[in-house]
Amino acid sequence: MGEALDDPAQQAMPDIGKTGARIVDGARRCFERYGIEKTTIEDIARAAGVSRPTVYKFFGGKMDIVDYIGFAELDKIQELVRARVQRHRNFADTTTEAIVASVQVASGNPYIRRFVEDLEVSAQSQLPTSPYQEQARHRWESVMKRAQASGELAADLDPADVVNWLSRNQVMLLRVLDQFRGDEDKLRHIVRRFVVEPLLANRTITSS
Image (cartoon, rainbow, N blue to C red; front, side, top):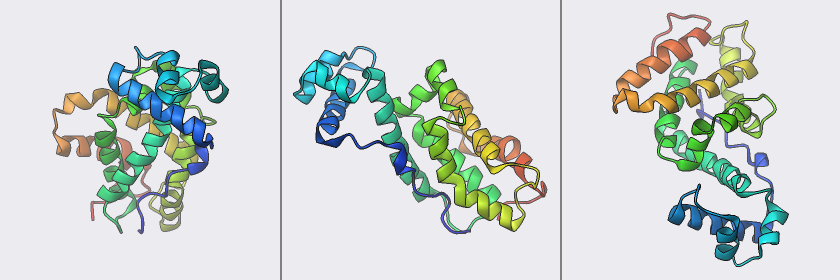
């Protein structure tokens, strides 16, 4: 089946230049030292060696910086997922393993968890027009096209709706991951049986 997922959607990350990058680096150091909630714009400006107004020239506020970092972290997670998911699998196996891997890798990332723990941010990220969904559609594009061409994906499903469904389930699984108590096989079974199999044209397909 080729690569499991496409390269991350780099177009979702605006070019912020050297000064913007310094602000982001300063913010990262502050977040690691003080935590996201306790960090102030003044802390970030001081760490970046710029003025407070300069920070606002690039970002609307602290949480805009957090969101920017979050998209960068999604790219990193994507690379880790690509490394974990085996090549040349069928759609069901590829999708199952990609979801399991992404949830496990993302669970310890505070920037990604913001998409889960902040209900407003979580709701916004699931809108079809959100940068998060645009990035997700880009990542899954070739997988969906191959699944349609091979007849693995149910014919009545829109690939964009499928990607949104997968994204929503990843968020839900991140919220309840602790309930699996590290049981990867149970997590994989739940993902396969309740998330992936309903998408298949032939629901009796078995793992390859």
